[in-house]
Length: 344
Image 1 (cartoon, rainbow, N blue to C red):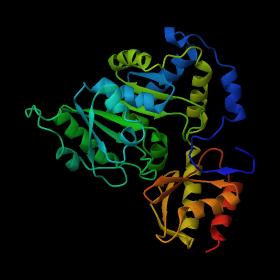
Image 2 (cartoon, rainbow, N blue to C red):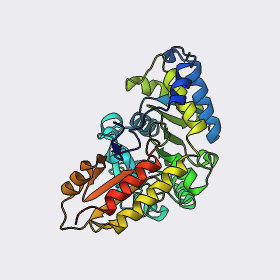
Image 3 (tube, rainbow, N blue to C red):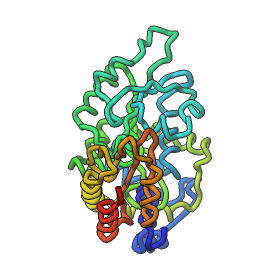
């Protein structure tokens, strides 16, 4: 990204800060395939302790971590249940069916979130052998396609009770969970107590160049090592990248509040634009909005590009803006100015 360009396509476009790079270069490393990289071990222990869970495993991507969790909790021909906007269904290349041989039962929730009562209504009766066996529930917090929305924790607790009553495993796709924790003033321990497994992405809001973690029981993580290898995820001297994750957890969590504040400021500017018909509620760092039906989103995007501002289309008439570590107040003022003075 050039100095002039303002890229609001995603919070994955950030680059390591000089301080993070320096920390990475000083990492002590070993061969992680043999479980001998001390920095990876330190990162895994750090995140497991933070959430009060037994163990964690470092992955090159969030998709691989989620797909490993699905394989841990299901058998071929079974069924996972998720929202219709869930990342594991929409944006992981059909991996649930390919890797684990499971189908997806979709719930028609609100902004990527559903109710415990909705879940209870779609679980297949295990005695009806001609139906796929429901075995796993997946929720995503914050919701990507839902515009960075945060689940209500009490609803997550209700869903847990439904899972327990029906012997269903419970996985959290927590790609942007720290955004939710900061926005809702919640603690990692709360989530560690609730879920059978959690995936955490380090390369989105936290600003690391790569990496995700899967947290679960020691038994599950022992099995996950084999699944990660099966998926081609074994890594060697990866402690340099794990060090970026340690630095991110220590230095880039509290600052997420800035991303949220800047997103709300952009949302206000969009609401005042004559191009924009609707802006979804903004809780964290993602803004979803729609233009008026008679306006061509391609023209809107081109107008922004004239000022070296990049955003992305989500399809279905939705446009997305994501604030992040590399988006500062000077850039914020420029984007607001451009939005305010866009020609009709």
